[in-house]
Structures are given as structure tokens and as C-alpha cells.
Image (cartoon, rainbow, N blue to C red; front, side):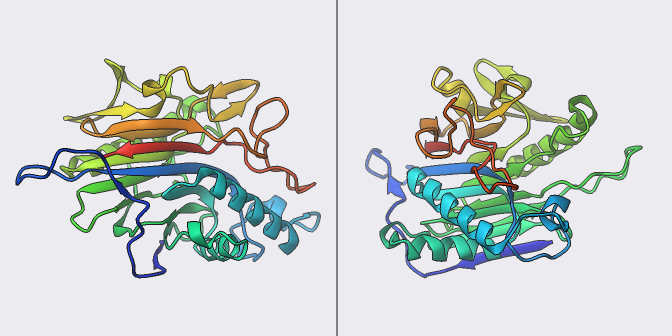
Length: 319
């Protein structure tokens, strides 16, 4: 497994704000307000070939190049600035080296006052992608949770690990980053593996008695989850966890985050613990990452145009 926690500077950034709460007593828990963005970048490779890239990026007919990589970096930094989040989470990122490139590019473009000073990356060896995080606030207690299923008739496919970290040293405010199995190969045929990933998540959450945020690309629409009383229910054997959903909290605000076969899907999510609050939620659709039809400006390798087939989602959480 590739597993990296980047500690880029050693001071605390003030962008993590204390929420309006009553004066502390011995039994009062301090809450914080954090703005988090999550985005599936759509096959974000660098320009160095290592053998795990998709064939269209490495074949003799491929048009992928160092120049196109730099252009994609610039476009990513445009969205980074639009989001202006305390924590920016990415799926389909090839490696930790790209995090350094993003940080250097962002600072070089004169955005030093909004610099991301901390980062983390987790990915499995010999897989094309992992998940990356850039943060203006310190990250603690980085963990990775993996599946190793050998009881099914078919071999376990490549699946990204579940990332976990906290934003306080006491490990009471935790963030989980998911990238569940895609529907490639058939929705019903792959549902088995998404169910395993859901069980892994519920088990990881159950071991914590803290406030938490869950986000990422779940490849599962909000309407396909078990919903009871406007809350999402995660189940694993005798474990049942109730979650607040960004889509359910703001049901009329957004059409979706992914546009496929002329239909919007809500497969990128923010979930929070019951005693946390979703203050704000939206997709970034006021920038160059949107087509004239209002859909995600999908990246096209051959002409180098576009951003991603997903919209970035942004959520402000008090937890």
C-alpha cells in the first residue's frame, strides 16, 4: 500500500473556525466549523509512466504529455480557488507526487494567502488511483482500512481503501474518505462489492464514539441507500448507524453531481454523524468546469479540453 502523510509546515491555520457555542463548561465539547470540498478528478494521471496507467494514456497513439498534465494542474487549481475550502478531498488521483505539484502550482500562481499546508495520500500498490487530501489545517491519526474478501465465487476486484483521519489531536473529529466500486461491469453485478465497502465503513465508524464526516464518490445514488426518517441507515450485522445526508438536508438545491446517459445522479456524498450539523451544501457549477448545457465538462484526453465528469461538491459542517 502507498501510504503518505505530508506535513508541510508546522503551524495551525486559522481557517478552521470555532462555531458559535455556549461558553465551555467541564461537560461542554468544543465544536468547529469546517468547509470541505470533495471531487472525483476523472483519471488524474501525472506525466510519468509507471505501468499502472490506463492504456489510452500510454499507447503509441496516446496524446497524453507533460504539457497536457500541466494544463490539467492549472485547471484543478482554478477549482481549488473557487471552492476555497479548508479541506479539499480528491478521488482518482494517481499518486502523492501530484499533491506536491498542486501545492507548488497553487502557490506559484500567487495564491499564497490561501495555501494548503498539509496533505495526505492513500492508495494500493499496483492500482491506478488512490485518494488525496489537501488541508489548511493539521491532519492527525491517518489510517487506512482495506477489504480482503476470499469467500466469494469471484475474485475480489481492485477497490480503493477507506481513508480515515482526524482534524484534532484528541481524535474526536474524524473524516472518512470513500471511493466505492464503480458500476462498470453492471450495476447489479458490482453491488456486492459496494455492500462490502459499506460494511467496512460502518465497522470503522462503530469503533469511534466521536463526531465524524464521511465523503467521497460512492457510485451509489442517494435514493439507493436505506433511508428512514430523512436519515441514511448503514447496517452491518448488528450495527445500525444513522447519518445525516447533504442531499437530504438540501433536497431542492442541486440536480446532482454526475451526469450519465442524460440523467443526473447523486453519487458523490457528504454524510455526518447525528450530533453534527450540515450548515451549507452545493455543487460548484459557476465555473469553467461546466458546459453550456449546465453539465460537467468531462475531460477529453484527445483534445485536452475539459475538467472532470463529476462536479465538485462542497459542504460546511459543524461538528
